[in-house]
Every structure is written in structure tokens, then in C-alpha cells.
Amino acid sequence: MVAATLFLVLFLCMLIGMPIAISLGFSSITAILLFSDDSVASIALKFFEATSEHYTLLAIPFFILSSAFLSTGGVARRLIEFANASVGHVRGGLAMASVLACMLFAAVSGSSPATVAAVGSIVLAGMVKAGYPMSFAAGAVSTAGTLGILIPPSIVMLVYSAATEVSASKMFMAGFVPGILIGLILMVTIYIVARRKNLPAEPFAGFSTIAKTAFSASGGLLLILLVLGSIYGGLASPTEAAAAAAVYGFLVAVWGYRDIGPLKDQPWRKEGESLFAAAIRNLIAFPVGIIKSATNPEIGIVVRDAARVSITLLFIIANAMLFAHVLTSEQIPHSLASTIVEWGLPAWGFLIVMNILLLMAGNFMEPSAILLIMAPILFPIATQLGIDPIHLGIIMVVNMELGMLTPPVGLNLFVTAGITGKSIGWAIKACAPWLLLMLACLILITFVPQISLFLPEYMDSL
Image (tube, rainbow, N blue to C red; front, side):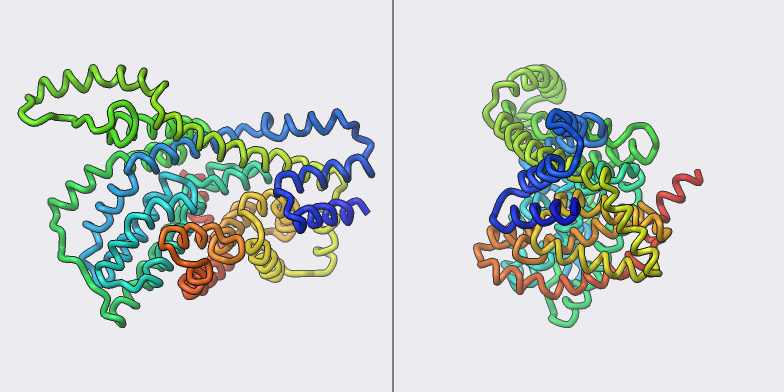
């Protein structure tokens, strides 16, 4: 009765258009008031515990702030230039470069829509001008953008870790190999299509250009080393690495690249200026720029936007944690787990059913909300069937990637439609062939666990 009431109220609230956070909280409070002995005061306590007792969640606003600075600060453009110089000379190289740029920016932003917006707004016009069909270019960028939630650091992985108490560091390790593998599969597919359709190739840029663009993009590339190196090396937790990334993102955008903030349009070296004079001027500009940033309107907009996204996501998480509390206190996941085990459903059968459920949910809900609702239910069943929690998490994240490409709530579809000026229907059609390819990748990752588990197990053995 409790489970029926909980899910009935939840789905009714969602059907009438109530925000997912309010739907989760309202259904949970209704179930508590009707069937639980908990007091109303305990509900407020659970809201407080939802975030205060999950240290990993602190990483989310830091990564969002870091992504906001770097998305605004021109990192995407420099990563695209580096990727194009590296692989642009191969047949279909401009499309392959966009995939590589998405992979690199994914390791900077941790967000799929942000990756599509940052990379797609720059490369799509250039690809069409170079002779690529608009639908092919849009589909490639939209699909590669989904890697933003798989290649670490990933906000969605942090949400899964908070919902299941699984190590966020191990999730980041587990997502690295699948993310690189899917990126390579996309690039190989582009090469095959390019050979058949005789898509253009850029002239080889030369090693000096590659070195120059690599140095220009080093601000973003070094962040990847800072975050992943500190986590994988055991020097910092994901939360500590996220805090360092936020500070680093601010410094790179404001003082390094100077695309925003009080030092905007001030070159590192003026024409005719000596190196010594330029060094002294920039050393003086550093503390001045930091102080002026506190009142700079551009910096204020970036911080406010990041705060708004963080508050929205954390509010969803707080309500979802209350929902998970009701599930756990009423033993709903454990009852489902016992029932499925009694049915004799094998692990591979459960994985098929789980993938179907997640793919269906991805059509209607945002990834973080899906994980927060489904993970507490599926996690006990998977562990009883002997499925590794880390492997389970990666499967769920890859399902969320596909959700980014499926209507009516596919976020990447809306971003792509906005960038290209086309309709949602056109974006769906452009992404359809790539969606089939992603389904094949999902099957591969689902039934070959070592793709996800190799790196975490290897790091544990050191």
C-alpha cells in the first residue's frame, strides 16, 4: 500500500506538469504522513541530512562553477583548434576533431548539454562550410556531447555515488575507459562514412601548429590532469579536486585567457614591450584582477548562473533523498530484490530488463532525477544477483547518455536544435542513426564488465 501510494502520487504529479523535485518531495511527504510514524519535524531533518551527510555532493557546485568559467572563457574554442590540428587532415577529420574536442571538453565540464553547446556552436558552421551535410555534423556533435556525463569528472556519476554510497573516485576511474572507447567508436564510424561519401579532409596543419594549438589549449588540458591526476593518484577526493578545479577555472578564464573579467582584452605582451616590462605588468595585474573580479559584472553573471544550476540540482537531490528514505524505511527495494531472486531471473536477464526500464525513463526525465529514483530500487537487486556496483553505475550512466538523444526530453536535441536553428523533429532525425550506434555501445558495456572494471581493479592492485 505504501509503495502504491508513493509511486501513484509521484506519477500523477509528473503527469500534471509539476516539477520533478516537487513531485518527489510531495509524494514522499504524503506517504510519510499517511503511513509512517515519523513526525513532520523529521521531514525537515531528512532534508537537512540529504545534503549535509553526503560530502561527495559538495563536488557538484564546484564542478558546475568550474565548467561555467571554462565554457565562458574560450576553452572550447582552443580545444577545437587543437583537435582539428591533430586529426583534421584525416578523411572526415573535421567531424573526428569535433568528437575529440567533445571528449576533451567533457573532461573539463562534466556536463553533456554544456559540451554540445560549447563545441557545437563553434564547429557546426565550419563543418557545413567545409562540405559536410548539416544532419551528419549535428548528429555527430550531439552524440559525442553525451560523453560529457561519462568521461570523468561527471556530475551524473556524483549523483549516483550519493544515491548508492558507491565510491565517486572508483566511478570516475570506471568511466574513463568506456568514455574513450565510445569516442573511438564514433571516430571510426565517421571515418568509414567519410570514405564512402567522400567527405573532405583538411590539409595537414604541421607539427608546429599542433604544438602551438596544444600550448594554447593547455589551460583546459592541464585541468584534466589536475582533476583526474589528483583523484587517481590518491592525492585528493573528488570534492577536493572539484574545489581546486573551480579556483583553477576562475584563474584560467580571468587571468590566463582573459576572455572575461577585469583583464579582458589586455594582452600578455603589448607591441614593442620588453619581456621584463610585460612580466612586471602582468604580476601587478594578477592581484588587481583578482580584487576587481569581486565586482565585475561578467564574473557575477557566471557565478549567478552556476549558483542557479547548482541550487536546482541540489534541490532535486534533497527531495530524491527523502524519496529514497521512504523506499528504504518501508523495505520496498529489498522486497523487490527478494521477489526477483525468487523468480530465478539471471543477472543477464535483469540487466536487459533494467536497460529497457532506463531507456524508457530517459524519454521523459532528466538523468539525475532518473538515477535518484531508480538507483535505490535497482541497486539492492543488482548486488543480490552478483552484479558489481561500479559496473551497474556505468551501465546506468550510459543509459542516461542515450536519454540525452531521445525525445521528448532529450536535452542534447534541444541544444542542437537551438544551435542549428532547425526544429526538434529535424534534430531527432539527424541523431537517429547515431542513437543506434550508441545502443550497440550500451550492449557492449553491459555484457563486457571488464571494460568498466579494468581501471578500478588495476588501480586497487597497485
